Every structure is written in C-alpha cells, then in structure tokens.
Image (cartoon, rainbow, N blue to C red; front, side, top):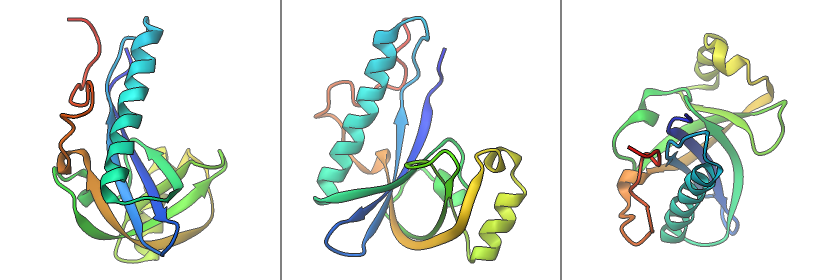
Length: 156
C-alpha cells in the first residue's frame, strides 16, 4: 500500500517576482493496482493545476519537496499566508528541493542539519530565500474536479 503523500511545490510567476508554495495531497492507493497509482497521481496533478489556475497564469515550477519540510507553519490546516521560505537543490537534480520556513538562513541550516531524513536527500549549494504565498488544498473547493476530494483509492 502506498500511503497518502504530501507534496510541496514552489512556483514563480513568469512576469514578476511573485512566488507561491502549494501543498497538495496524493491519495493513498494499493500497490497491487497500477490503475490506482495512475489515478492517484492524476488526482494530485488535477488539484495542483486547478489551484494554479485560480492564482493566475504563466507559472514556472521552481522545485518540489515530498513529505516533511522544515517549519511548523507548513502543517497548518489553512494557508493563504505570506512566508519566508528557504530552499536548497539536491543531488537528485531538478525538480527536487529541500524547503522550509525559518526566521533566518542560519536557523534554516541548523534545522536542516538536525534532521537526518532531510540530510539524506543530499542538499547542494547555498540556500535560496524567497517570500511566498503559501496555499493548501483546504483553501480551495475541488467539487468541480472528478474525485478531487478522495483521500484513499484502496477498495474497502
């Protein structure tokens, strides 16, 4: 079984220096069914596309982080917040990044160095700092998206 997966994606508008950090969920699915896995990824991509369409047009994807980033605010039930976000590239290459919120670069690096799971992602280079609008699924109505509110695709 593949459990529900939280995905954080940084986007930048192409015409201005405005950033968005989106948090989406990929539904859980049974590993025994390729069709469930395909559907889970499709649902997450549809939700992300819908969110971006509501925010504007012409976005460039900067990077993506799956699972647990740095910063308690990234786990809140609602978004629409302006945040100081730090991110670093990883040895895995684009689009994979490590990201989080912190009051300073040194605080971000301290928290990163204290997290063995994040260090295993092999961060490279210097941290980049952006101001981003943090938006999550709970900030949107997905009733227009087929299966948009499904969290688990496994048969009961």
